[in-house]
Length: 226
Image (cartoon, rainbow, N blue to C red):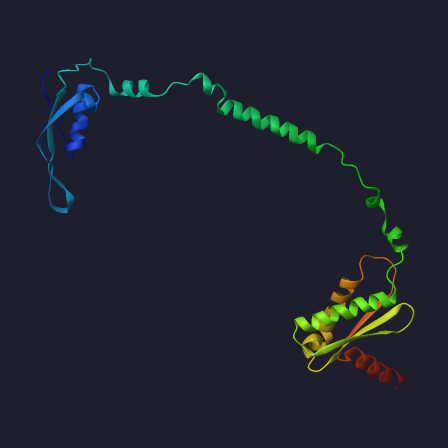
């Protein structure tokens, strides 16, 4: 088999060009590097590489197009791949799942009897007693004082059958009162939410911190009485 001579910017590029001309794989060819590539200034190629190549004499093969070899080298689908996912059956699977989901979405969910109760029904259920509300409020305010790291003690007074006042007494409680009692109002709402659950009828809860509410009531009474 006669030799072919090719050039390239590198030896590998020259070899690839020779393989294209011979139409064989690299393992079926033999090469002779005539000249190595040389680089000039700024990485420019000063001299291209030059190689000679031919088909190995002991294993001559007919000339074929390398592109045909690549196509023939691609693995063929086997019987085991029959169940592999393809774009067509993937779309069908998605559509089937969508239909199934739609059927599930149309299924009526049974409503529990308790869910049909109205707020009026809840109003008829008696809530905790004033004593129970007061004790829960006392425990909550003690915990709140501990969280805020203030020296205070919670106490409870039953004002009447349905009204209870929880008081937090101590020194330096301005942090829990806030400007114009805004923080105190938030503490009262928070305490009510913690101890009074739902709209059921029960005791009314008031919260005072450091006697702030009491002083306001006394000032209002003096103003009213003139």
